[in-house]
Amino acid sequence: MSDTNVQRRQFLKTSVGAAAVAIAPGMLLFDMAHGKSDPVSSKVRWGMLIDTANCADGCNDCVTACNKENGLSGGLSPTDSQWMRKVELKDMRSGRTLALPMMCQHCEEPPCVDVCPTGASFKRADGIVLVDKHLCIGCRYCMMACPYKARSFVHEPLHDQKPDVPRGKGTVESCTMCVHRVDKGQQPACAEACPNKSIMFGNLNDPESEISKKIRTVQSTQIRADLGLNTGIRYQGI
Amino acid sequence: MLKLFALLAALCMCASADATESYGMPKLDIGKGGQCVEEPQWMRKNHMKVLFQQRDETVHQGIRDGKYSLKNCIECHASLRDNSVIGRADSFCEGCHRYEAVKIDCFECHSSKRSSALVQKEH
Image (cartoon, rainbow over all chains, first blue to last red):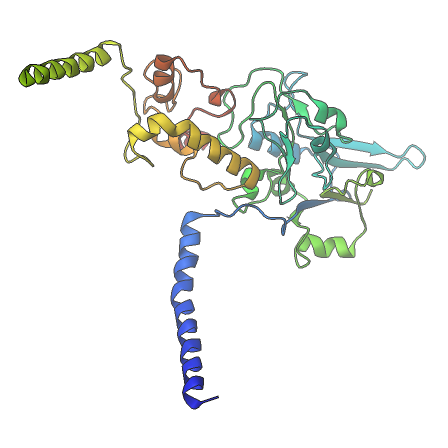
C-alpha cells in the first residue's frame, strides 16, 4: 500500500472521530430537551419483587398510594374499582400468617390478552399489560380469564379523573404498573410508598439491575407458576 | 357586463360572510391561546386525526412527547375562568362541537381540566 493511501486513511479516521465528538453532545442535548420519543422496547421487562417478610400486617400504604395516584375511590361503593389489594394468608396447620399486596401480575403470556376480542387488552413491548380503553367494549372476558382477579369493570360514570390516568364507564381496568410514571423514569406509586421498601421495581431483562441481582440470590416465587404465565411480579417468602 | 358580474360576485361574498356570522358561529373562550402547533384553520379540520394517531402511539408504544397531545391542547386552551375546555356554550371544545352537533367522547374518561391548575390545587 502506498504511503499516500495510508495517510489518506488516517486523515479520514481522525476527521470522522472529530465529527462524532462535535455532533454527539448536540444530539444528547436534543434528546434531553425533547424527552423520550422512542417507542418502548422489549430490551426492557419491567417487574417487581415483593418481600412478604417485610410486608407489615395491617399496613395499607401501597394500596392507599395506588388509589391516590390513579384517582380510585378506595371502595366507597361495592362496584368501585380495585387495582391493588392486601391479601392476608394463614396456614391452618402451622398457624403462620403473612400479608402481601396482590394486583395485576403483568404476565409474559397474559390470558387476558388471549381472550380479548377487540385487541384492547394488550402487552406493551416492555412487559406492562394494559387495556386500551379506546378499543375496550366492556365484555369482561379478560376479567373471567385472569387467574388473579386483578381486573375491575367501571360500572358508574366517573368525574374528575386524573389527567395522566383516564378512566371511564363501560371499560375494564387494572394495575398499569403506573405506566405514566414509569415512562417518566419514576417508580410505581406503591413501590415508592412502601415504608419497609418491600416492593422492589426494576428491569428483569438487565442482569445488572438491582432486582435481577436479588432474584438471582434469594428464593422467589411466581403465584400460580403452574399456569406457566411467567409473571412479572415475584414474591419472596411465601 | 364584466363590471356587473364583478359587482354581483362582490355582493354574494358580502352576503355569505354576513350569513355565516348570523348563523351564530360560536365565539370561543380560547384560554391562554398563543402559537398553536399548526395553523388554526388546519387544526379545525384535522385535530381529530392527529389526536387519534398520537393516542395510539402513546398508549401502545409509550411515546409521550408528541406535539399533538390532548393534555397540551387543554393546557393552552382551557378557559382561564374555570380551567376547563367543556361545560359552557363558549368552552373551547364544547362551543364548536355543540355548533357542529358532534358528540365529544374524550371527556367521559379524560380530564377536561388544565393539569397545572390541578397540581396547584393539590398543594
